[in-house]
Amino acid sequence: MKKLGFLDTAFLLAETRETPMHVGGVNLYTLPEGADEQEFLHEMADNLRNVDKLLPPFGDRLKTGPLGLAGPAYWEPDPSLDIEYHIRHSALPQPGRYRELFNLVSRLHGTLLDRNRPLWEIHLIEGLQNRQFAMYSKTHHAAVDGARSTHIARAMLSADPRARMTDSPLSLKIWEKYRATLQREHRADLGDRELRNVAEVLKARLDTSKHVYGALKHYTQAWLGRGGPLKLPFLQVPRSSINTSVDGARRFVAQSWPFARIRNMGKAFDGTFNDAILAMCSGALRRYMYRHAELPDESLKAMVPVSIRQEGDIDSSNAVAAISADLATNIDDPAKRFAAIQASVRAGRAFYSEMSPAEVQLISTLMQVPGMLLMPLGLASRLPPFNTVISNVPGIQQTMYWNGARLDGSYPVSIITDGIALNITMVTNDKNVDFGIIACRRSLPQVQRLIDYMEEALVELEDAAGIAVPTAKPKARKKSPAPAKPKRARRS
Image (tube, rainbow, N blue to C red):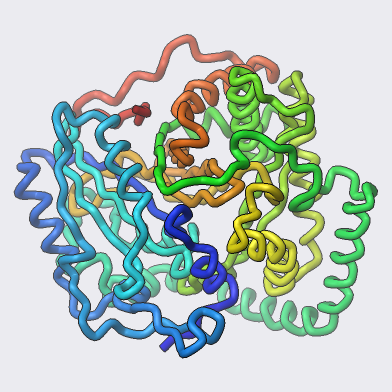
């Protein structure tokens, strides 16, 4: 049995009927040349189910003692695993547009996982137009974070369209093969890295108390108004329609943009790709709030998760901290808004810069404790730590295939909670950045408009940076050797 960490248990404690704590994703695929859709998907479902020993946590269920989650919690093998329950086959109603797909995903993502079983589901979905099919998956956040999810997805894909996988991509055998491949790729600098790790461990033991003291001192200064651009949870967070209590109904929308286009915009402002992503989201949120007559005078704040996963670690369930970013939505000029966002992110990273990963997670968790306590009490919507969550997960930057089916889009579906009714998560995929937006259907009934506002915000930033704005949408690839990859996976 494997014991759950503090952060893993916190996701379970925070879960209610209205706030499921699972993360997921929608992968769009194009069928291989000449393949029959129903026959191919039946083969894929059989392949997923054909496994002797599942990769953790897919074969494990939650086990607690007499105190429940107030005491130790563990993952234990499920002695009565029903693989048919976890892997399901669905079909969309006609005409099989992205609207029907995203409506289905919205409903599936709003339902709780059964805690008497392993906490995951996979849905193979047929009936899309243009010879496409989809796979929606969800797994409890107590078991995986974004980085581990990416590794699990990567293990089932191949850069070779002719490659075929006989073992289930959920099997421990495939996972061990994937791990061995990663180790071979990093073997060349293994000796130097091991020496660095030893040095870092020795240094951490000497410097931990100094780093923690310095962080707490900086934290206190920020609360006293002397933190400069550093923003902290609960500090100067304005109220908005995003920061309300939520119900169980969800609305999911998705869209893709060219990676190079966003990166070039960030470079033009001497910023990072992540700065560019935040500026793009900030401009969209500013438009959304303004056009609903509720743009606050004070800037919106976003939680930006930061991975602290050690190099080579692909097995930890959660290895993540967070910074609070000022989205500068109270600034009209896009260039000045970008600069304010950039300064805030740099200050947040500098706050953690001298710490070890363990120290980063400790301090980050301490800052989240008030929110964890407010959530079960139903007070999170009154004192939200942030306005929204914007997460950038590094993905796969090449064309990939699943048993010959080309991966056309990979759209994350994350978590919303009381007080934070909107989550924007994106992942790099091939030459695109795939955005997945999840919101409470009641709190933000027109969240699909954020897709259009993001494009407007990107054009505004390109114009401010002096970059030529595209006058037409990029054309889809010609049908050779496979059907065109969609550039816009649109909303309902």
